[in-house]
Amino acid sequence: MKNKANLLVLVFFTVVVIMGAAVVQAAEVNMTGTRNVSVDSPMGKGTPVFVLEQKGDQLTGTYTGALGEAKVKGNIKGNDFQLSFNANGADITYSGKVEGNKISGAVDLGTFGKGTFTGEKKLSIQ
Image (cartoon, rainbow, N blue to C red; front, side, top):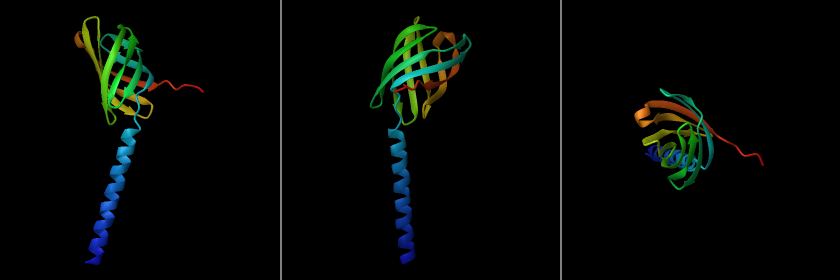
C-alpha cells in the first residue's frame, strides 16, 4: 500500500512539473517587435513588415506591404496568434503560430484569395 501511495505522489509531482513548464513556455511568447514576413498567395509573393506591440494577450501595430499601410490589431493565446487589418476595402487576417523568433500560418486576403506566410522577428543589435 505504501508503494502505491509513493507512486501516486510521484505521478502528482510529475504532472505539476510538466504543467508548470508549459505555463512558463507560454508566458515566454512575446510578439513585440518587427517581423519580416514572406507571403505566397494567388496575388503572387510579397514581403510585408509588421511592427507589433503585445500587452497581455492583445496585439496592436502596423502592416506595411504590397497592400499599403494599415493599423493592425489581434490577439495571442499560447503560441497561436491572429492579426487583422483592412486594406483597400478588404479584411485581411493572418492566423498562425509562434515558434521562438519564427512565425508561420495562413493568410485570408478577403477578395484577393488565401495564402500562406512565414516570418522572423528582426533582432536588434546592441
